[in-house]
Image 1 (cartoon, helix red, strand yellow):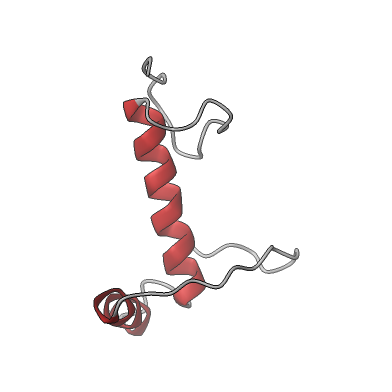
Image 2 (cartoon, one colour):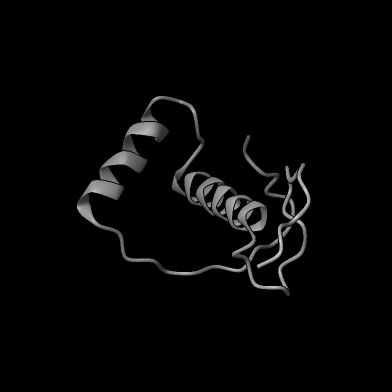
Length: 74
């Protein structure tokens, strides 16, 4: 689900492999995401959630959106 664009967000420049770039272009073209930014944000959200749930996220990371299980001890 795309985020509201009503507030400013920090920006970053990332270098992608051709394979990842092709994937992003395909899922945007499918209509599942509005743009590449939405795809990257979703991927990072899922990574944060996985690391939280398996206990590998840094202790300073807040509870990610969608987390439903307690954080395991690292």
